[in-house]
Image (tube, rainbow, N blue to C red; front, side, top):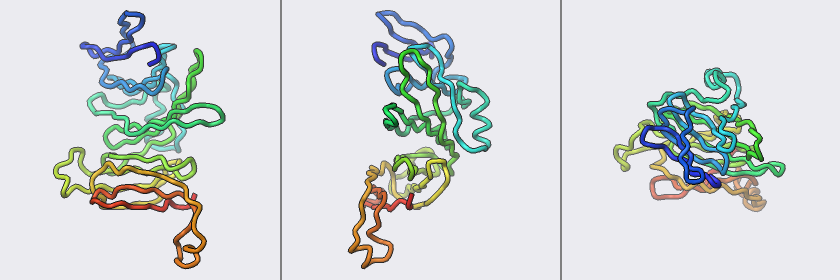
Length: 242
């Protein structure tokens, strides 16, 4: 991370290597995972939960929960700096994407904890400022998330999931694909795909007037996602108009 090196020591502490010195961060105990987001911020999962830690200021960034009222919102708002999650479950980063909005750089991070999927926006930290982190999506899926695709700002995202956490047999494994709006509303489903990864490739197409006139419902402009189907073939999914 910039000029620093972060790691978990043998005592499950988070440590920062600075100028040939190992500096433990005493505010964390039982650290299970560290994920570097950018030169200033890393995600830390310890006994208390998950937080976004600013290396430069040695502080956890404040969480701004931008989801509708729900059980998830109530739980996420219990602490302004920590996402309360059990230490004995695995937290993984499923997807990341860096975007620019009005000359501001934002890292979008998809976190998965069992069947809970969180989309978090981490703005670039400038100088010694501590810009708030936004939780924009919190969804409990029917199964375990396996793959993810940001489609566009207005069209939301795709996420695939499976019923069991461990794959028993690829030949009989089946996964399902959900399309969510940016605010987490379910818009569409494709069932019984094969195994991930699906190699999502979203693209905006201008449409084809000739095909549109000849074939009802085809040739329309909009967002399309090309992807593997997990059975040896390739799909092209027309995302709902948005």
